[in-house]
Structures are given as C-alpha cells and as structure tokens.
Image (cartoon, rainbow, N blue to C red; front, side, top):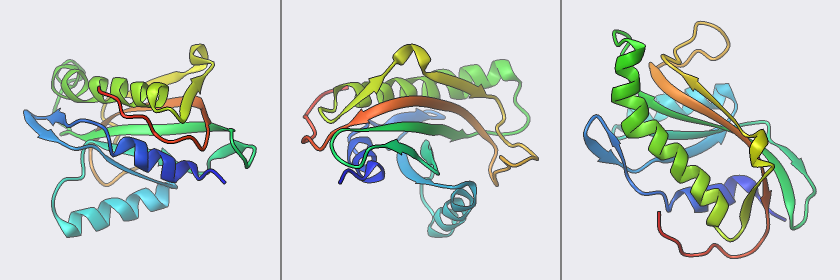
Length: 166
C-alpha cells in the first residue's frame, strides 16, 4: 500500500535549502487539516528553531486506487513568514522571488524526477499566490504568511526514489 504522506516526506527531505530573508533554511514538510496546521505551528514555536519555509499538504487527500500506482489530488501550501506592513510589490521582491518561486520549482521538479511520482495533466495544475495569507476567515493562521497554493494530480508508484540533483 502506498502512503502518499510518507512518500512526500521521503521526497521533500531531499529539497535543497531555500533563502529566507538572506539566510538559508531547509524546507519543512508536514500535513493535515487546518486544525492540525495550527497545532503544528504552536508546537514548533514552543520547540524553537525554524518553521519556514513550510510545505503543508492539506487533508483530506483524494486518492484513487490503493495499490501501485495510485492517483492523488495534492493541495500543497508553500509558505514563508512575512510582516503585515509590506506592500505587495515589496512582498514580490522579498518573499516570492527569493523564497517561494524557487521552492515551488524544486517541489515540481522533485515530483517529476523522483522515480516514484509523476505530475499528471500538468496543464490542469493550479498555482494561487497569496500576498499576506493571514486571513480572518477559515484560512486564518497564527503567523503572517506569503504563500503559494499548488494543486496538482500526481501518480505515485511503489518504486524506489531515484538520486537526482536540483
């Protein structure tokens, strides 16, 4: 049985560091509902250390099939910490260009060349930029984010992960 959450953990552990405000950090991956996200952020804050850039897999996860291969609709939020007082033009230069765009490209590449995953119907991928993700509605988070929501359909197999470079 293919456990997509574990395969993504394995894959995203290979991601290179990403610049956040001029300092390089290893992206952090986790998954769950919005409630789990809030708990995750609170727990990481208590532990101290780095939380961002964050790759969050939103659940529930729609999956077709239970044996190799499986088709999965992924909803990933790629987020980085920001401040409320920036203009969108500043956000583009400070968070999107140096952090979120390269992270998104690395996530896409990893899904393409892993040896066990393949993005299906790439023309149907969806990328939504969120300038100041801090939303008072159902997406409210405890930090102020700039984020990209990436939605795609991915085919996963039980093959071994290939070694590749970014």
